[in-house]
Each structure stands twice: as C-alpha cells, then as structure tokens.
Image (cartoon, rainbow, N blue to C red; front, side, top):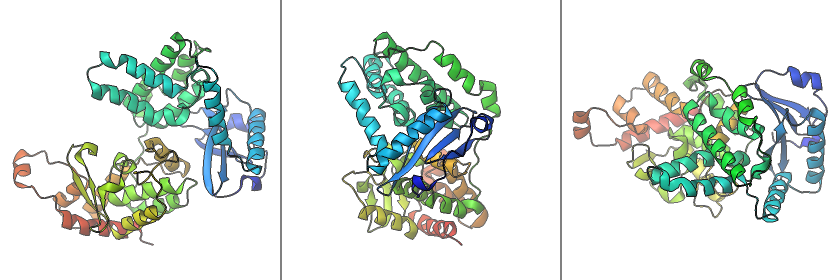
Length: 402
C-alpha cells in the first residue's frame, strides 16, 4: 500500500456493485475501505491504513453483518482516530481487553481455547496431541479473532480463518473448524458465550465448498522458476510489514520450509561461517539441518540485525511472536501470486534439475530430504555442505537476475 488513505477517492463502490462482485480479490471503496471477496464467494470489509510508516489491516466484519454504508461509517471513525495519531487496531484490542477485565465471567476466544485444552488434555493420547490441538488454533484462528470476546465471534470470523486453507489444506481446515466449534460450544455451555447462534455452523458449511468440490479444487501451483524473480519483486513492493516481506524472500532464497523460517532464532545462525544450523527439534525429519547462506540471504540477515528488537526471533511479529503461515499466504494472495509458500521449494527443485548440472544428491540435500534407500543412506553420510553452498549462491543470483 505505502500511501496515505486520505489521498484515495471515496465512495467508489455502490450497493449494486458490491452485490455484483464475484471475482476473488480486494475492491477499493476509498479512504482505506476495501471489499474483500474470498475464493468461496463470501464478502467482508477490510480497512487498510499506514501509521508511523507501518501498514496495518483490520477486518470490519462480513457483508452479511454490515452494509456498505455501515462499513463506510466505521472507516470514517477510524480515519478520524488516525488524524489524531491514534492506532485504531490497537485501540480496538485495548477496548476488548478492558471489556473482558470488567466482567470476570467473560473470556476471549484464545482464553477459552486454552482452558478447553487444559481441561480435556488428560483424555487425549499424549502431550503431543494436546500441543497439536492448540497449535492449529494458534496458527489459523488466534491471529483472526483470538483476542475477540468469545460472544462476539461471528460466522464471518470463522470463515476468514478457514477460507485461505479450505481448498489447499482441506484436512487441516476441517480440524480447525472442528476445534473452533468445540471451543464455542464449550464456551456456550459455560455461559461465556451468551449469543449462541444455532444456525452458525449450517451457514458456515453452506459458505464453504463441499467435500467433493475440494477434491476437484484448483491447488495453487508452485511458482514457475522463470517467474521467481518477478515474484520476489512483487513481494518486496507489497503492502505488508518489512519483516514479513524479508521473511518470505529469505524463505525463497534458502529453499527452507515456511515454519523453519518463521521460527528461526538468532542463536541458530553462524554469521561468520555464513550458515544456518536448524536444530532437529524444528525439522520435519527430526535431525539437524545445515543451510549455507548466500550473499543475498546474508544481506537480509544483516538488515534484520540492524533493526533487531529484544525478541530472540529473526522474523518476529509485532507482538514478538512467531507469525502464522496464513500471514504469508495472505500477502501472496493480495499480490495475485497463486502459489503456496511450500511451493517455492518445488520451484527451487525444478530449477536445480532443469537449469543446473548439480547432482541429484546435492539438490535433495538442500531440501533436507532423506533417502528412502537404506543401503544408500548407510554409505552416503555427508550433507554435501560446500557443494550446496555453491548451488545456493547460483540460486540467489538466478532469483536476482534482471
């Protein structure tokens, strides 16, 4: 975004135009107010603004809950706050917390989810399952409505959490839906959620593609390696925080998994040796993985080091926590990049196979793939680090080509 919302022309949309919008995307009304149309066709209001050189985005509710005129009035109120130097997103969060503190019988969604997990954890198979249960909500639900009063969580909030992953991660999305429902039902039984809507889940189900449609749904392809440079340029110019933009580019340059980058800590990096040592506990295969860092990857780290805050994370959120994968996915969608973050690993693998002469073993080692052949694994113990360094330098140069 990078521009003041006050410069936008107002009232570009009409009620008829809002109802007619079908293509997924963001449609500007003016003054920072956008209509968002999701891949499933549901519509919601988004307010974007820039304050202290930071781009922010906040949801204003679903079209089914708020009309165009109502959304405009809310956006106008937030613009007045911005004119006084007040951050409307921070203010809204503070008001919600104050409201919760004012009534001990009230909880936000995250508090209810944690309490539900703690009460039911003893009946689950093991601690790992309990952690996985809460982690899915931490990743996909909490960033959307975790700090919202559980009574105020609407079907629009639920859809906003589910829609980005419904087609591309159907099993995960199904689990997230089940767990959100379990928390809301539990909160209703405890009288924490006072406005129980008996039609909520029927309406959510009708708003999402059917199971048979999911199987036929278009899976977002990996970025063709011929387009990786232009994609990085779009990411650099995107309306997102510098941290998210840097993290996505670093993910591409290192061919790492998104979760490995989002959880990267400063103590994992050898800045002198230009290498990143990811501990086994954070790796999918459960074993340590060394990543040679190209000159371009080092530049990103050095820039992050200059702007380093007290967090141990290299790419922390504004709250000093690990970003959700959805924060990255939403940026890609806004920029019209129909790829998944994980797909960039396929991009790298296709490039290494078709555009270089590096052996297959080197390419697979760069992705931390384990060999399935037991005999080969027994004799092939090297991680080919120096050969991989040469390959990652070539990959970084390719990504930065004119």
